[in-house]
Amino acid sequence: MSAPLQKTKVPGVYRRGGRYVVLYRDPYGRQRSRAAATLAEARLLKSALAADVARGEYRALSGVTFGEYFPEWIASYAGRTSRGFREQTRQEYKRDLERHALPFFGPMKLAEVEPRDVKRFIGQLIGLGLTSNSVRRRMAPVRTLFATAVEDGLIRSNPTSRIRIPRSPADRPDDQEPAKALTEQELARLLDEVPPEWRLFVEFLAHTGLRFSEAIGIRWSDIDVEGQRLHIRRRLYHGVDAPKSRYGRRDIPLTPRMLDALQQQRRSSNYGDEDDPVFATRAGAPLDYACVYGRVFKPAARRAGVPWAAFHTLRHTCATMLFRNGLNAKQVQMWLGHHSPAFTLAVYVHLLADDLPDPDFLDTLTRPEGRKEAAPSAVAEQAAVLDLTRAQRTGRPSHRFASGQRRRRLRSQHP
Image 1 (cartoon, rainbow, N blue to C red):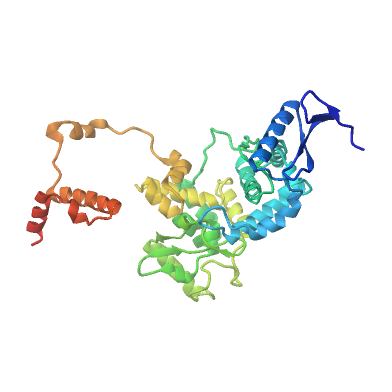
Image 2: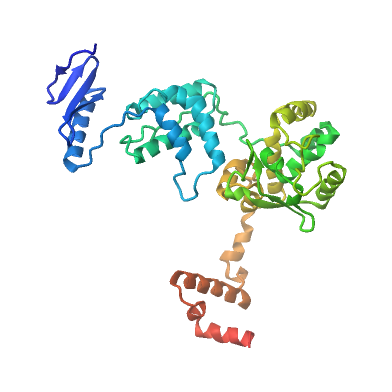
């Protein structure tokens, strides 16, 4: 039996035990009640409810629980942007929600979940030894589910909004290198320790910088021998799927030596058809990460003196070599399939030289005798770019923006 209601100094607000109850009438005249933790919260809640009813914006809170809403949401969710929602992401959301969120939020009504409940859930995830990034990833479907519930009119606000993910004890210390790569000597030692039948696969990962899931999805038809290019069009992650993002669909140059090694493997393989995987088991099945890592890579890494290395370390090693050989952030971004050069720099900025160059080259820009006038062809090219930009912005033909002098020069150059 619940405790009796006790009047307070605020009309319509009552105390029941250690909490407060707001009594009000909906637009249909039915009396309803809402709970609040403090008297101040109850006063604000009563004012907000009265204003909603007066403006015709009142919505009755739904009694649907998290567990009841989850199956409907995961089956029908289509994304919150025009890009849509990948089926692989749906499976990942489903797995994370069933493993963590459903046991915690399942019996709770969506309308009764409060920010403090969300904070307790985050604390529980951190207690499992997860890093803050892992917690953030598992919170993503929870935030999205509640955002959709707001759109569906089941709740008034998203209890996960503005909730900060705190640092976890499992997070990497700030002074630890964020993306550790193998040196040339360490990579050579590792390749020497890898069994011969696996050496090409490890070297291929260091050469291309592919993720493990991308590498095991490569087929012989993806290798362009004439163009010396590797086409990345899929990955194997809980089944065949598109690359991690649209930027993951890319072409990577291959050296002649790597192409020769791949062609030799194809000639000696029992699975050399166009649609067969380049790297597979003896039965032609896709490679399993845990099996190859535990039985092949990790023992070789220990023997080579780099026990901390993993398959993703080879991706960092590739990025290191690319930067060291003069590629800029945009080129490395395209090579690795990142979504932006800014992300590439954020991950690998520690690989860039931080020593300042000699500033003498600035004299050529600031001293009159050091400045050189641009060649006429360069001037014409710059002007043409400006004209084209104006034409795209206004919808008018680009030649309309050319000056009379430049039109005459162009006619003399191209009679």
